[in-house]
Amino acid sequence: MRWAFSEDNTPAVITAEKHVRSSHGSGDIRELPETCVIFELGIGLRFLKENFDTVTLYDRLPCFLDNPECIAVKGHPDICFTKGGYGCPAAVDTLETVRALGVKRILVVGMCGGFGKEIQVGDVVVPDSILCEEGTSHHYFETVEFVRPEEAFFNQVREYFQGKFHTVVNSTVTTDSFYRQTFAKEAYWREKGCVGVDMEASALLSVSRYYSMPAAAVLLCSDKHPLSETESGWKWGTEDFNRIREAYVRAAIMFALGI
Image (cartoon, rainbow, N blue to C red; front, side, top):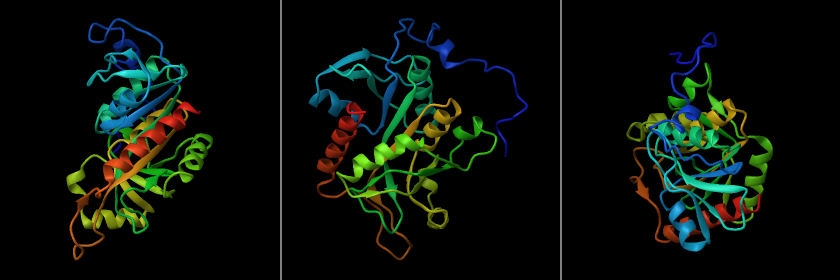
């Protein structure tokens, strides 16, 4: 099935640039810093506000769907932080919006389920490629299978997290349907070289690529999937997972502030 057409030169009916200035947007438009961290986990912005001296750039970003906050850390005017929506369409809505407001580089900070033999809960995955098993990317590119991060930015992320966590550098996959992650499907993903699955990263990297924006992703393994039907069932987290998750979010923030 093909959803993007190379011969289609017509403009979009609505763009993020038009939307943020529309009556459905906010009307109060301010430029954002060139680098944005998009958290795809719930505690990201909350942890940032509780542990750093922050300033609010937008109470409500003028997205089409959700309207998350966008904040910065005082003394670091070149980077901002926001929350992407859950699932690819909502996450890309956030990305399109911050791009329309001046952002030129994206770091995706999220979580993933692990189904590779080499990955455990609490490991940090820095994907060197992401399999696009979601629909959003296919509206931007006529053909796309794996999407890759911008190499220099990826190397920065990899080197930073390798010094602080047990870090897995491998492929992951993004899906639209977490209740259809069958054993056969996850075996197929392993054959493709993937070790973990999330719900936003491939689309965020695809759309960043579409606009020639450097982007990279980092994912914390939150749950380990059984490798076969004969193994014990799926389980979320570990006894100390909340501590690990907070350490991961802090590390992501400190990395971003040091870019």
